[in-house]
Length: 181
Length: 213
Image (cartoon, rainbow over all chains, first blue to last red; front, side):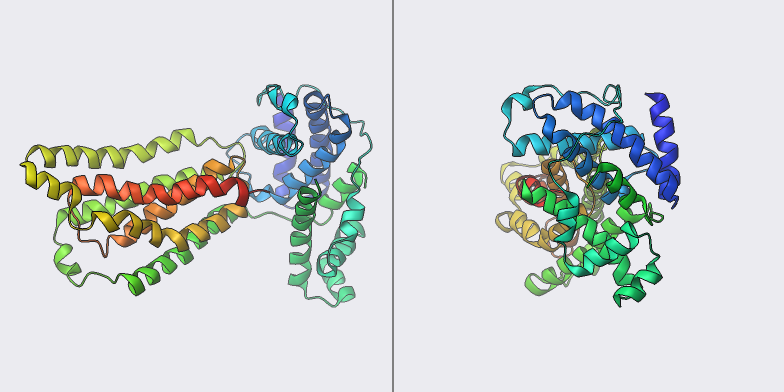
């Protein structure tokens, strides 16, 4: 637990300072932790696990500005994961699943799982449905790894519009996930 | 899309994150909402013409401090509830201090008064309008603070909505003090909190709907 906290918070701190490689390691590590946590919580809904891992990772990314360096990172992530889980269970109105007590902040990191199962939802298909002003910046910057300036040149958008497009696009993606369920 | 591809997508070019964003969002919401509330009050109710004379009354400043303390406590609670995993119960107890202080003053005031005087201390001349005026004035602040909350990550949306409502009510009461003629502690201890609770109740109901993310 302490080890996980120390490892994750160090990586996240570097990520928030702009280190993309550290951020990637952080998200992979966190994804494994989330998968293990959700596997135990969603015994009756195994098909939902990987979708919820992705939804939670996207939420962590979109809300990473709400992390306060003074608080334990695992508590912050746990609150997000729990929120997304409860939201899913509520949407499914799955009473028996809601009756299961949720783990607490200490226990939830017990068993990470690095093996990802398939997803039911395809984020790439959702991404394709985004309007161009959101989709193009994401495709160029996030999938092809181009710089802001290069993306701006190719799309004819301004640099600030490119940055806003990525930011809003990922938020819109989260909203689409929410609404399709 | 595989989870690993999503991770690569999220991490690529993610850039640095400004830790001051939540603070700035609340500051902006309070600033713009506060201006909206001030304008609303100036248009509908007006500012007291005898403010300079009021400024000599210690109870006028007590009233301002009371509203400001409640607003500060509500802001601390709202800021906690806007962050996943932050505990709000501890700071929520800060709300009790100004309230109890005012109630204590009220008990003293009522203890030294006769029957008809007591009635005047509790009801003043504007008790019918007071709570509704505060609730009405809280609207611009309420809308601005809900916007601030939406951009953050409240994991307990009903509580977060209530805190945003309470903060808008307390800040609106502070501004309403520039119009309100009442200075009696019993009045301030009853009708002001009632006015603040109205937007808080609306926030508690609207939160789960409006603050989803």
